[in-house]
Length: 560
Picture 1 (cartoon, helix red, strand yellow):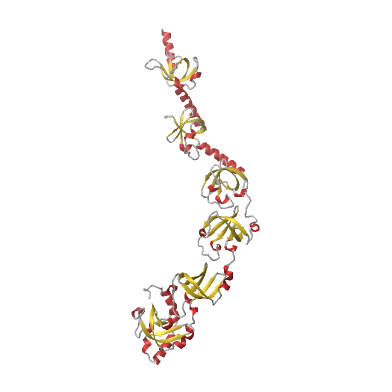
Picture 2 (cartoon, one colour; picture 1 turned 60 degrees about the vertical axis):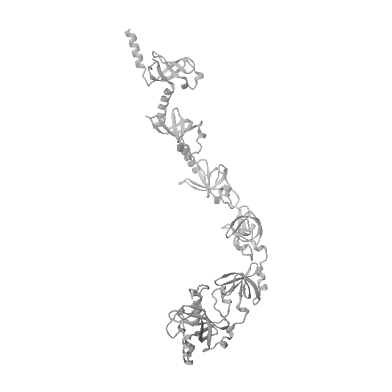
């Protein structure tokens, strides 16, 4: 009896709860497996803990975790899964303390990442799956990968993995091998990884190279997507290597012959070429005349006579056109083209068609401060300068005598063939009244006229035949006058004496205050007027007219 108690006590010491023990299968039931571990009673393990249930046989030996020596029914509580988990956990601890590398199978997608079976359940954060976090995590479920254990919590039995670290390490090794091996000028193969507005990133088996948009083709390219697609394999040339920054510049067009070689021989000046319009811009049209070779037709080279403000008014992208080579710059890879050169220049015959002195008729097309543009024929304008509108009147803007759209008669006074300009004059239709001005107006004559303009220095008075005279502010009154408008108004009839007639300078000086002067007083006033110089308190008539042009604006009654 004492020996039996000793044996029982000894067996109790050999079995500790929480330890892994060996057992032998006694019976295989549908839902449970009966296992004998040599204890006074057998243990029951759920059949779900056995992966190879069909291959189990009575008598097989298994390692199990002894959870409890007896439950309420007096049975030993065993677990095969927990025994495996404990064994695996110990292995994982050793791996983590070593290089941390382990294989595992992705089980499921969970919030924030994936669960992975590495003998125990581990967590793989979404940010650690790949270099670029993937959008579709389901694609990884069921696959086996290499991982690195980056974190372990022994208390909670938590494991955090990273696949990204291994990928980055592998890529770094491949980058170093590539940078040590490859040389500038070599041809390499890669796959398009990403497209941007400025180019494409090419995956060169571990290192990304930049293929700039300017190095993709010799021709015009609006966006890299017009030529390349993500995933596409390409052969490219290494243009530059920066080992410190691990940057590689690539070229695609360099794999082809440069179409700009011997460009002057293929496209000499004056050669007629055909091409397709590839792009329209405000200043011209780009035309592809050969693959990789474009020429520019400036908007000014589209027509000899038509006023084309935008190339899109006469051309469309994709249109086939003919043009003439005007110039070639191989260094800057530019070709100048022209369309109007396909036809004779009408300006070559302009001197014969519109001879100087000829009277012509046209329609006022536009007016500026310095003159009016008159359309003589479609695309051909002549300009009447404001100074050629009247012999006698001081006209500050052509709108004082002309209207837009009206027909006007004028005389051709000059032709500038080089700059394609025709100068016209209206006053030349009549004789110059200033040639006989000294016979019509003499010093001392008493004249009448109407005030037409006021300026700070005096007033302009229109006499007969539209001839203007100037009453200087000093000639308005015997008393000091501060402002001309205090004495005179536009439209007012005045009587004045002629105190100056300058035929060469086309000036008539008038004096209101001298209307009742004697001959001696008039002589002195005339001499005083002759002595006027620019920059003094009183200005000469010529300077007064010039100042009037600066101060006076048509329709602006405030500047009188």
